[in-house]
Amino acid sequence: MTQTVQVDSAGAAMPLYESVPQGAARGAVIVIQEAFGITEHIGDVCRRLSDTGYHAVAPHLFHRSGDPVIAYDDMQSVMPHLGALSAEGLDADLAATVGYLEGAGFSPTQIGIVGFCMGGSVVVLAASSHALGAAVTFYGGGVTAGRFGMPPLGELAPRLQTPWLGLFGDADQSIPVDQVETLRDAAKNAPVPTEVVRYPEAGHGFHCDARDSYHESSAKDAWKRTLDWFDSHLAKT
Image (cartoon, rainbow, N blue to C red; front, side):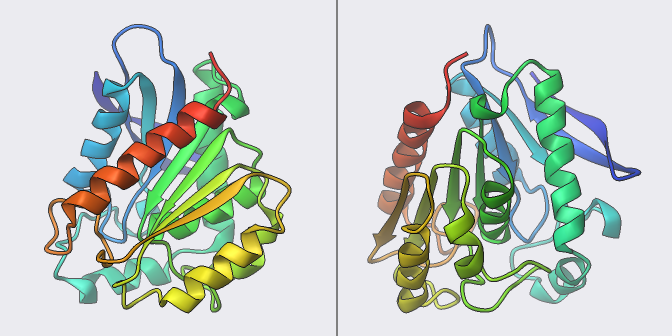
């Protein structure tokens, strides 16, 4: 079952796209959007997760700036919405989403989080602010200089409270390999399990099959690692 529900986020109504599995859920996963909004790809990720037994929700993080869905080749339209983000607003949205899942019967350690592009960066913020069950970042940038109103990921990584997996492409021009290694080293100082995987032939957005940058073999391996990470670290329902 899929639906869109509304939750309160610091006094603002925020939509959540929700995909619920048939039968009892094995856990819950928050899916954090790309910089293009709640695209069909993000909905597909939610549905793929629910097909494997997870109760998946995707918060509409652009809800304060019109909640658009933007074409992948229209970065000019993306920028104002990225500029409207703040760490405070993102914290409120994440807390509201976790609260919604807690109301559905999941404890924090039964909740995972995965994010792509912009959402991959937001996952690091979430995992350093909340002790959730598991977290996965797909190609989230802003390692040495903060993006999206957040501190640099290199500063957040040592404060991770949630087991964290980072998935990056060596051909990603927006996240140089040396920054990926900086993030790997910073995450090693966290008091939770962390791992970084690099894909030599993959660029930015390699998991999204709606983009020209889709890299099938890397995407399939990364998805398997994501499901394995959740299976290994999420508390059982």
